[in-house]
Image 1 (cartoon, helix red, strand yellow):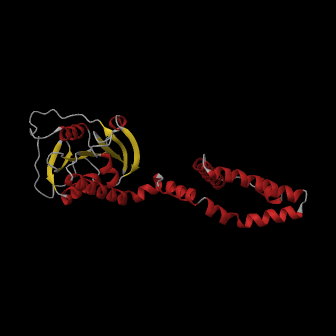
Image 2: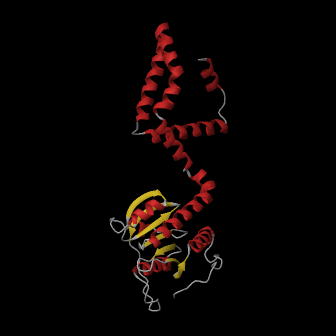
Image 3: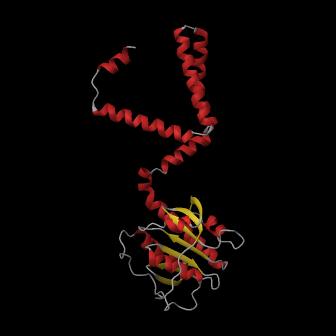
Length: 272
């Protein structure tokens, strides 16, 4: 009891308050993370073992105390073996926390662009129509709510699967928020300008309608011609190659303010 007496007899300074707050948050975060998993049962069992350990010291029960202490020696190894999946999940959640995500954002954006470019090339070669929209400063929550929530990592195999004509989600747009697929089969507003090229289909008009009402960037794959197009600011750039699409997405998605996009890397057709 001497350490506890010394702890409560000394004055409390701001460092102590910060220390308690951090430990409380860590405990709260840990309990939320393991809620509903096998790890919660392990925590309850560990608390029971700790109570028994202190009880054997007070009674005293030397043999039981020795047995519990021996078991506790090997407990960390048992936890690692039995709960390796939960540990991986916990570290994955920690890595996606906003503080760490801020530093990894550039690398994630590059990976996201590459996955979309790869999916666009595959869909183009197969003549499969698609729309992939990137949210920027203006939120697209209304359009996300009109579709089917997904919240998945952006990957070319998932994108190509979504837009297969035999899947229920192929008819609509995929919206990407914060380098994750937020939703699929989203309904977008159609552009109604009479000056639009007559060979532009519904997908192109939907992508242009979205970019007219927001600062989003939309990639369009034509089902009839298999060509790759890009829409932003209500304009459309057609007949892009993989390298063109990659360069334009890197330019448009990394810029901080509207209107700072550099000139296209090749001559494109703009319809408006």
